[in-house]
Structure formats: C-alpha cells, structure tokens
Length: 111
Image (tube, one colour):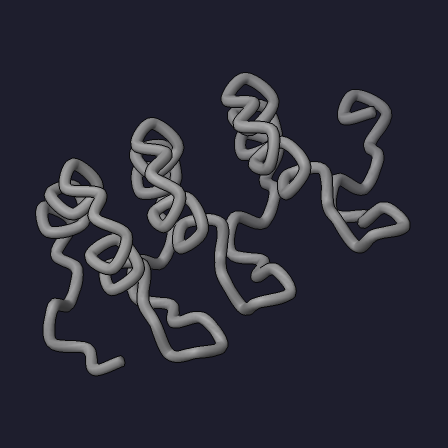
C-alpha cells in the first residue's frame, strides 16, 4: 500500500486509520512503518484521546517511548481535559510517569 502511494490516513468503515488499528493491536512494527511514512500520530479517537494519551492510560511503555521520540504532543488534553500525564497518574503507570516527567510534562495542568 505505502509503496503504491496509498493514503495512509484513510479510515475504514469504523473510522479507524491504519495507525489506530496498529495501535489497538499494539503492533510496534506496523506502527513504526506508518510513522516513518508520516502517519498522523496526533489524531484523536472518539473520546478525544490522542494515541499518546491512550497508550499512557493503558500502560504501553514501549509505544509511549516511540511516540515521544517522534515528538507526539505530551500536553494534548482529551475531551475531559485530562492530559497524558494526568491519565498516567490516574491509572498508576509509574514507569510512564517517569518518562513523561523526563519529557517535561506539565504537572500543574488542572483536570
């Protein structure tokens, strides 16, 4: 698909882009290929969560590292005003909390 210049942002019938589907299945290899092909890593889901926010909430440390390395916005709030750091704290993922702090996440953002 990518080699034939397919639009990698085209959603399926459920509104899922290839990147969202790879994220949902935690397929790091496909995610990396899509990121290198300039997939949008900021597209929010139906709850306003960006891929970074969602992976922080779910505790997927390796995916969080990849997204931050690729400059995902660490301050984007979801539809409830919760940032990735807030979601991480709420869900108790200490390793991800450390990663976000090292990436200079704003710990003062109100919920």
